[in-house]
Image (cartoon, rainbow, N blue to C red; front, side, top):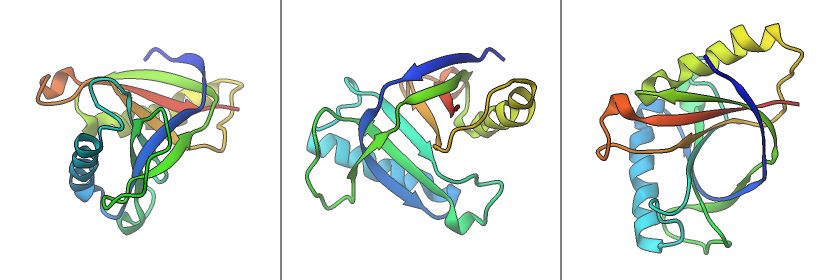
Length: 155
């Protein structure tokens, strides 16, 4: 597993908060996608797409799983019926790992960073959520061709 240490700038995003069972996340993704298409504020073909995880679905009761579905924006977005709001991904140092394949396997890579790589380094985890940048999407590519960058915040 190749891990790069990168410095990221703060990223202004429009975010839809998903709170609840991880199995219901796809419905929230569809809601965010509908906002994205209707508003035109964050076209998927021109702006980056992120997922920000605020809890680990393996370590917490599923009913409190929290995940933000995000699209990069240039300006503040207006209040809307979808519940999409203004947020920011914090600037800072991150360990970056590229994952190819199903999003269902992302947690395995996160666990490998946290349990295998981090203890063998002098790095420490920063108090910021792990986030994902989705570089392509289905159905444009097959599931095994999905590319996702994982960002693990470091001190």
